[in-house]
Length: 243
Length: 191
Image 1 (tube, each protein chain N blue to C red):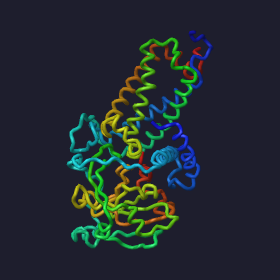
Image 2 (cartoon, rainbow over the protein chains, first blue to last red):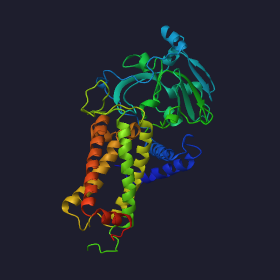
Image 3 (tube, rainbow over the protein chains, first blue to last red):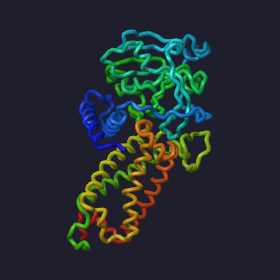
Image 4 (tube, rainbow over the protein chains, first blue to last red):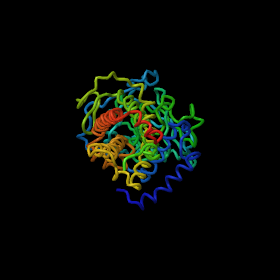
């Protein structure tokens, strides 16, 4: 039960978000009537999640037996197939944009960071949900090592199967936001995005990109690709998928 | 104090919120179907997917291409329903609307009050329990509904219950004088 005082304390924050939202807090995808409700949802979530709560984590015995793999399950990209044949030893994640140290990271580089393991519920927009254990490096550690500039506000992700999406720093720096290289105690399988996929536990499944190949730190999204923040937006999938 | 001819039977706020609610209900029902046909299987507990046994399954063809606009319409209509409902309930509380319902039988009063104060709040809460963002801030929602898939199933069943209510509600307006009832809900005048 939220107390009246606590609610009142939070109200100016929500107002501030909405007011500054037009030019500051919201991604550039909000223009239609649907954009209005997306913006309301986004602002409400930023208020409710202002203390950065963790998504529920489960005991290992609740891990789903046969976690569904949908969309791309084996990228046809020739470079990818070669890297896969070489067990991803030569695979590199490019890190660029507003960072002091742009460069490339191998899977071994990512594994050299302290890891985080979490058993979470994956919520697909189709309606199904399944539980898996994910092991990886917190995105915040990679960003810290890269040295993000103070004006950085978004992280854009590119995948080898042609998808791209982005997170703002609020979600990018969340402790459960991982570049995951392990699943259910083993290596991340190809059908689930090997060698590295994104985990964003407080948003729907479609934000959890598989086959991440590069990340770019930026202060604006309107000059990235079609300017909507994610390639799902053009197909009716909102940039913010916390629902 | 029966409504006399030429005198408003329904207050303006009731008429306005009623029709906004009617439009939202239609939008939510249609978009709800658009969302569910992406996966017309229902489960109990936390998880449920292609390989797990369903509690029940609807004999509908799977269609993955309607969830984009479906979710957009659903969430827009849900927000309007919530704001509209707050106006209605807020006004109703202040005006003692729910205590004084003249001309309605006990059964009617029970049906209407349970829709406003039980079914619709449960509908909103079970919907929010499907939100990975909201449940990270309010995991107690999972306790209330027994997991995300249970919440989805309850959301669907409650939606059906609301549809049954709607059919009964419309039938009542037809049986008790459709034209007179519509005039009363539109222009406040019964004649």
